[in-house]
Length: 266
Image 1 (cartoon, rainbow, N blue to C red):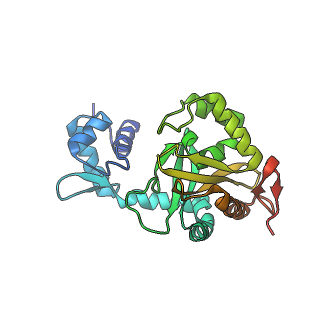
Image 2 (cartoon, rainbow, N blue to C red):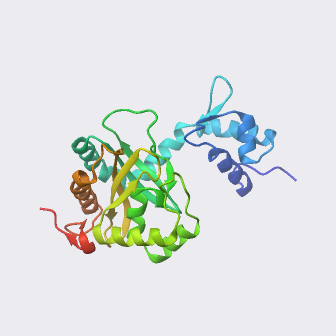
Image 3 (tube, rainbow, N blue to C red):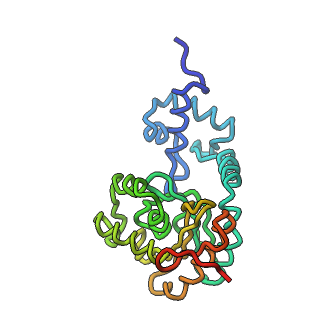
């Protein structure tokens, strides 16, 4: 029997296994490590990696290691433009970062995690997390909790069912505590991360609504705990989220305030 071709389901699954072996901590991997992480024979890994390099989905470094290629970035950019969310949010995020002098995030929910579509910082920091394309458990982040508070009960149940991970001693791992916090977020329209995804970092977030009033994402302002004062950034976060929501077609206002009542921004 002939080996599976690159277009066959088996080969596609294996190729995706290679591409998803990378993470923020390991952006470059040797062929041996790629094979180990993907659970593939080295010969299969070499063949698939060579094909992915030819297509631009992987790059081979001078030392023989591999890293993700620009073709993936281009596809990602196309996907984001099709959705329009990042493009609509960009100017609001830039203004929010400028006004608060802190790092700002735009994220969406995927499974039990949030994926960061954009990160803007007033000063470059190579070690800042998360990065664009990065993922974190939704329940440990302000953006994640802002989204979950306005998600369907079924979506919330699925995220909780996936398990509540403890990234720091402050992470919420009790289901009843999390549900109570989501209820409060729905009442106020603002979510907080009190050193739950990283010690020393706090965040304030708000949801982004779509045309039908559904939640489509969230934004947050993040900074060093003790430097970022929630009471000073709440209004700015709400205003930015309202503006992005309007760009997504969410009525004439889009601000979610106490009681989850949407108010018009004047």
